[in-house]
Length: 203
Image 1 (cartoon, rainbow, N blue to C red):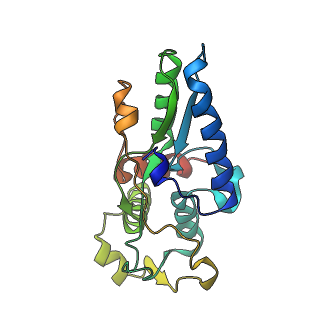
Image 2 (tube, one colour):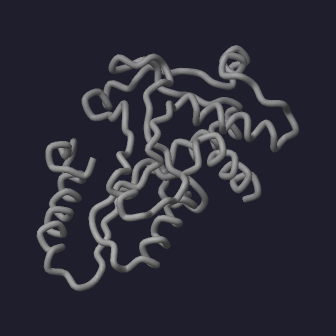
Image 3 (cartoon, rainbow, N blue to C red):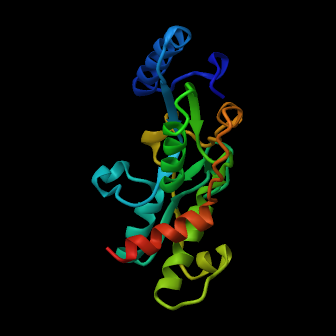
């Protein structure tokens, strides 16, 4: 939620973002023009290749699958079973739609979460990526268990370097966004990843 009691940055990057949000909050009452700050959750979709290792999980899954024939996820950690750590994954087309909505509604200002409002496990991203790729190459979809059995999905030990620095669960609270009248409907992982894999496979 975009409220101070829920804002506890885990690193300097997050803290710097919060400082700027707080400056905007103080200025909002006296502003005569629109200022809209967006807190993007885990965005994925076309044209993110330049981000390298910081590109989305879906992008890396696609490349792992094409190059190695399998997708690897982190194993159990922080009370979560393997692959069940969850994030709010939001498709870039929907992020664009939110930006355009605010462009068309210049009377709306504030700090807003931009996510789907749903936390989905990394297993869902892997499942969607593998099945979308199988569809592209003319093969039928498989269940998560079938993918594990066939070695298309594997789990690796959680890296020690990430212990204490990793978010095992994120989910956007959309009440502030919806209160503006923005009613953009966000794609779930299955449909968003399917569109993304179609795009990646044509590159």
